[in-house]
Image (cartoon, rainbow, N blue to C red):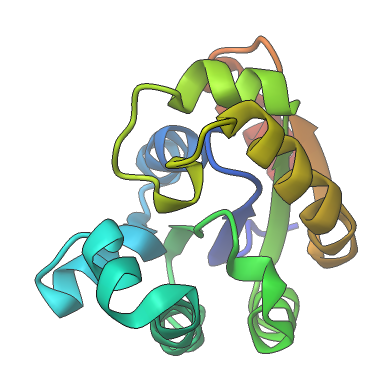
Length: 171
């Protein structure tokens, strides 16, 4: 079987989508794109600034447009933002246009990987771990229903996970 020409990575913030996606793209000789970085490139501002001026709803609208366009690009590995699955249209585009991997890890692992990162507006709260647990509880069913495969990144390095995904793609 030929390797799909569109590979999409979904999952919570801190699951490793960007790091793993870059390694995967390099291994496959494909382009890599991160939807959050693309939104920042298009707007010329960082995500916290978009949230500040447009709220989460404004950001999600921009994200929906970006994902619609990015899921149509051939020969690409796309890492989506953690909340991309909250919009049904995004889930439909991801499912219909490529192979989807849900990179799964616990809220505790996400916290370990993200607590120093000031570029994550949803974590600018008194209880970031609690917030991650709430987000995961709400989004996990959406990740699972959208994904073709679930791969754990819990306590694993990016190259090990990328190798596992490559093995799945080659099967």
